[in-house]
Length: 298
Image (cartoon, rainbow, N blue to C red; front, top):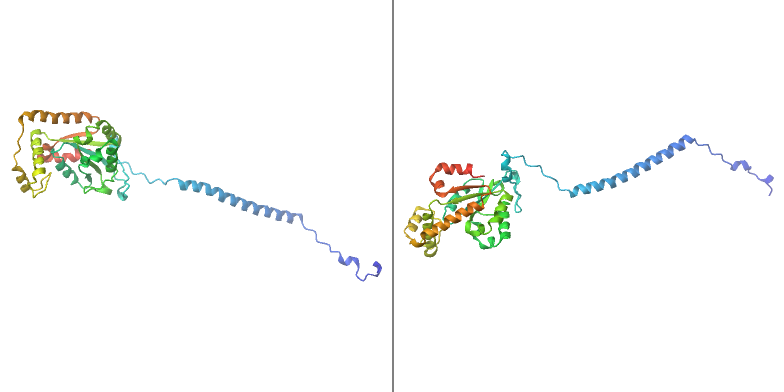
């Protein structure tokens, strides 16, 4: 049929949309851009924030440093803060520790002197550690043993552990000390170890004590056991019954040999921080025993 016969006029299908304001469109676009920008920035910030935080996690957290001890400047190299591997010092971690070594000879009163030191609440002297040959086999084993002692990882009946303020050992001259004196002197100076020389003034009495100890080791008059040190008047009386025989032809050379070894030890360790004591003076004079804890560098 022709157009003129159509029942619905053409204009009825034409819709005229209202004109949108340019300001509204611009506002919508701007908001969209702002939202996208904020989103992109937030993602970037998260990615950036992961990198430094991961880096900080790899950095060890530093502990609060210990306050400076009230000591003279020249004393600083001899004050230490060891960190044992076998336990934590906990509240005593900031207690300074001093290192020492009692350098002596057999039958010179070192056992009694060490007992005197260990009676102090915070002093640990760990005995004649290098009497075991494997520990003094070479310089490496000596240093390994010393490191364990001075790091507070050497556990013995004398150990005070966490709150130790001074730690050391008893070391005889013939137990690798003189043989490796150059390396040991350097170790003492590097690690800040103080040497305590303890000898007997009366070398003849020392010789008699050596002979008596040798007799006791073989005869064992004290209930069949050998005791290097007696602990009662009764035990002392039993051992005093033994009268050793001294070869007079060798007496003077033997005493001179002991004296020469003592002089050599003092010369070898002269550059270390050290103090010299006689057993007789410490035993007889109470004032000297009191001064030991002030003179000895603890």
